[in-house]
Length: 260
Figure 1 (cartoon, rainbow, N blue to C red):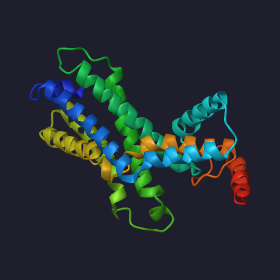
Figure 2: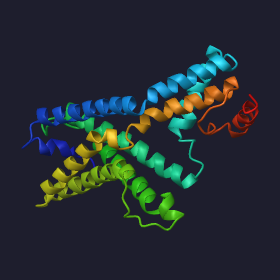
Figure 3: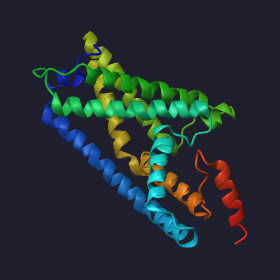
Figure 4: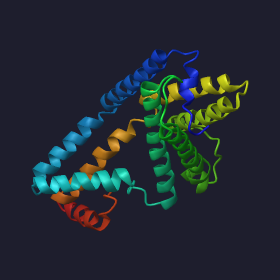
């Protein structure tokens, strides 16, 4: 089961070309949704203006230091999610982030490179698909039921829904029904196609709801993290919280900048 390409079985009644077109459409929707989000919230303009002002008002930062900050941003803020002080939340986030990467990458490879049962799919790709979906579910459900602030700290109901929950819920729906579909398909169950279409529905919601969910935040966070480091390095004040690994340094800069 874990070494079988689930999409190869689907090719018997859905053309690989249709599956491939669907993935391309989802990618286009993410791109368009992100562009809309940038224009609507003026995020790009905010970061550009902030960086311009900090460069003009602060100490000039050299190219080598800029490269070092970019590497720190990629490693500390993105790769290991250093922004999260709460260790449990960081672990849940990392499980979801890397699980989604594995899940999405394996899906693309299997659909485009090994779309039919006539082609032998290397076991690593279905295994990554299963592992990625499972990681999303573990991290996502852990966060939803035990880590969310209004649930863990305020005693709120885990079933209370808000607009901001659209991303995590659609992601969990996609990963959950992907696992259910893969299992039922391997067992030859009658409900296999119901699970498959629920997987498709939640996946479509996930990628088509970018303007109304937090999906686009994954593109903004690296820019915000880099801007924080630049502000800390050139001695100017930023509206953003301190860099994850430089709180003391940034705190001093922020305090002194209030005198101006």
